[in-house]
Each structure stands twice: as structure tokens, then as C-alpha cells.
Image (cartoon, rainbow, N blue to C red; front, side, top):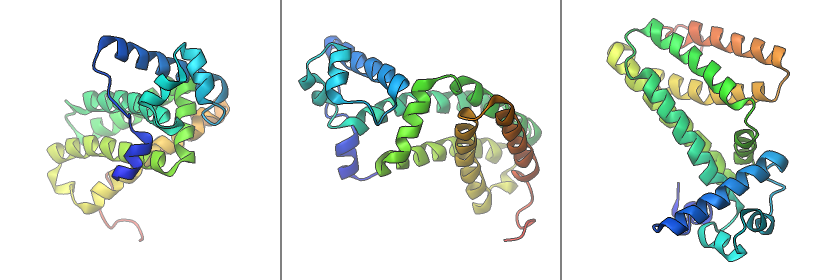
Length: 213
């Protein structure tokens, strides 16, 4: 991501003193509550300052605009997902187990975030801003790297450019499927997830070139 993009969505300054860290945490906690109630688009910086009980100048001291707040919250969730995924795949012993873990990850992801209005709001907010959308894509790439590392250890002969493209694609689509399921009625959501897991089991480790281009 370019410097210009980071200027508008990155932290203006990183707090070092305990008081500054606590103030930043207050701002993010207040933002999370507002996003859970209203969504990203309805959040106003002045409203946020009031909710966090800090001067409006303190908000802008850290965040140049609203998109930077969304990024900070998104980074928290993305880091947790990446850590969870890395832990799940660290000791995988076979490709069959890897498939089981991918499907278990989908269930965990869905169960964790279906009833989390903050994450849903932040996630939806990333789709309305090009710089934030790239963050989501970069997150998919990092999750794909974790899975690709596991496959490389288990079956290095499968690790070609096509497999990497496939894991990258599947990583991003997992997020998209869960996002759709999270805003759907429970019964249809479960069916969609089941269908997606069947696609993964049938296609993820299919031989290269086995399907039509």
C-alpha cells in the first residue's frame, strides 16, 4: 500500500506513554460501540469524541479521518484471525487433516462473527473505501500464506503457482461466503456454508489442470 494511502488511513502518531495508550483505547472502544449500533457510515468524529469523553482534537491527533479508525479496528480482528489460523495449522499432519481444519476454520469464523456487530460493521465498512478494501485483500493473502506453508510442508510437489493462486482465491472467498452467511437467515446460512465446504473438499487439492480453463 502506498504512502499516500497510509497517510489517510494510518495512525498519525503511535502512543508511547500509558496515558496516551489508554486514550487511544477509549477512542477505539467508543468507535466499536457506535459502529455496532449505527454502522461505519453513520459514525461522526464529533460524536465519537463525546462518546469517548475526549476532546475532538485528541481524536484527530491519532486518526486523520474515519477510515483510519476502521483500519485500526480491522487490524485488531485480522490479527486475531491470522493468529488463530496459524495456531490451527501449525501441527497439521496430513492433507486430509488440512481439509478438516479449513472446514473447522469456516465454522469457527462464522460462529465467532455472526453475532459480532462490531466486526460485521467494520468488515462492511472496508467495502466502501478503496484503501480499506485493499487491506481486506492483503489479509486474505496472509491467511493464504499460512495455509500454503502447511501444504508446502506436507506435499511440496503440489506447491506450484496454480496452487498458490488457488489458496489465495479460496482464502478470499471464505471471507466473502462467511460475510454473506452472517447477514443471512440461519438455515440458509448453514446450507451455504455446507455447500462451500463441499466445494473446498472437492477442489482445493484437485490435480492441476483437472478442470477446464
